[in-house]
Length: 479
Image 1 (tube, one colour):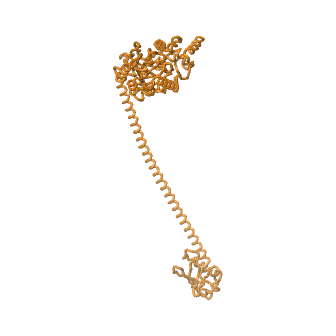
Image 2: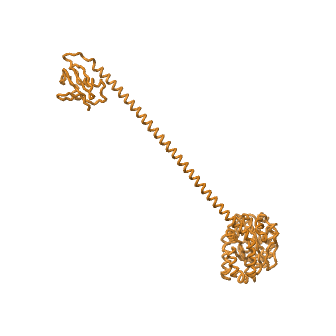
Image 3: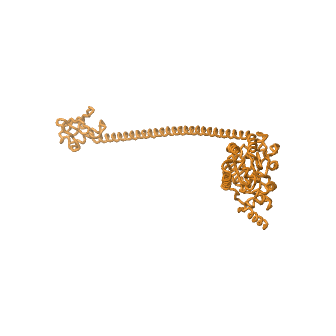
């Protein structure tokens, strides 16, 4: 444990790195070989560093093609396509002459980007996010993940940190060589890869070694060549990084850069990997770069075209589904609206029917009550007539003290009767009431010549006192 702490302290003192986790991962990636780790970091022995990484875990998934001699372009022989991951069989079928190899990216690079939702050419999904950082030089997921898993939950390169490194590189490059070079994106590698996927372009990668003697001339005469930079800007998404920076150093290990200047052309593949289509190491003239890049572009054109067509079809299908969904929703809403209207109409009809039934019952009950009241009134009047008829007694025979009274009704009907002269005028009213010829109770008996109204005040007078004896003719006047 003391030896580990001493190595960490010595490595920090030599490299100037302050991040303890980063130093630990670099040393772990190189088997805790202090000299090898320092050489890999400073760029003094890049090939040794790449070899050390490959011993810890598989840097190249599928058969590794090795490294070409310095100053030449590195590419895998065509048979690599047959021995590579079956998920990229579509690439091989589309471009049989395209030489490439699969490179697994470090977890820290993947976690530092936004993550790819799918491969640029339909080659699968990136598995990204929520994974702990592993050894800096580690490529893929090796056995060391089980031993060191959970050691640190922090990401080595966050989104903001990787973007800041990219911006620093672009600023330094343009400050030294001007703005005539490629338009390097100011974002992390994973974001640049995502950008290339979205724009259906390949990703041009330039790894810059500030200490290498060939770097200034290559940048000045080749990368800043107007023809080359314009070609790259039109046909590629360009990303650059310094191997002095964290992400640039990780990519140099992942791509097994053995000599600088170093350029590569990549595209997304599957499971945290990228397809390395072209690897260019050592100084090159603008013409040589153009030749290599044009060849890669021509050989990958069917793949990119197929990806673009597939994406357009996917967008078209998505739009068609959305239109169908919208039409379905509109039809469903229309059906629901009609159903609501039908229910509302049914409810309205039911309410109206219920209201009509309620009114009918009320009218029927009112008629029944009125008929009952009328019957009760008629029964009361009948009882009254019967009682008053009984109260009158028998009609007296003609005599000296008997008065003959004739009563005329508004209908023209006449009734007469004999009464004792001592009978009161009230008995005349009782006689009229007992006949049942009137439907009203408010009336008066009136005589002509002279006109005399026998109202309430005269009902107690006898017929003789009222001057109606021995006979009288009265008529009924309705009040």
